[in-house]
Length: 210
Ligand SMILES: C[S@@+](CC[C@H](N)C(=O)[O-])C[C@H]1O[C@@H](n2cnc3c(N)ncnc32)[C@H](O)[C@@H]1O
Image (cartoon, rainbow, N blue to C red; front, top):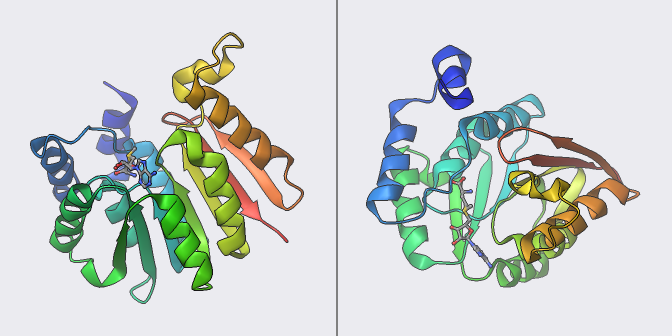
């Protein structure tokens, strides 16, 4: 039994719809790179436990994590989800609709850096961030998150152990170096309370305390 299977069988309880969304992603020939159940449940728990209302996700894929995040928000909360590809956004939007959450989620298509610049120009503010897109831009996404963060905001980022490669001093791949840089930025920032949870592929967390 895998950890995900154990957690699903005991107390996380991923409902059939979430399983259907994962199958839908594969049926659309999209990569099955959605977050593992333990990571999804942790993000869901954080949003609920800290009563988050305005969430920003970078990297939607087919809407799997988006449904987990949006379900944790109150009915008047909102998730803005950034996705590079319009065909992926279409799948994510269909899945969010299937989950009955269309009024709680807005997608923006295009390079996240451009969407983030737009959000900054609109003076958008968020109290929860989930970074899960191209790894090389994680440092840039952190810079934007800090510009868009309300005091007390939580910033979460997936894949921050890079399959354990982060621990190999001889690994200098672009993604590993970018994530090392990102983790250092989080760990050393004077206004961030940092943590790295060794769940899934690594989940870096920070609370913004200006
Ligand atoms: C790991 S997947 C996201 C998985 C999703 N969070 C989930 O768990 O269901 C990464 C996503 O980021 C998107 N992406 C990659 N580069 C991007 C960029 N520069 N701007 C916005 N999205 C990007 C990819 O198209 C892909 O859908």
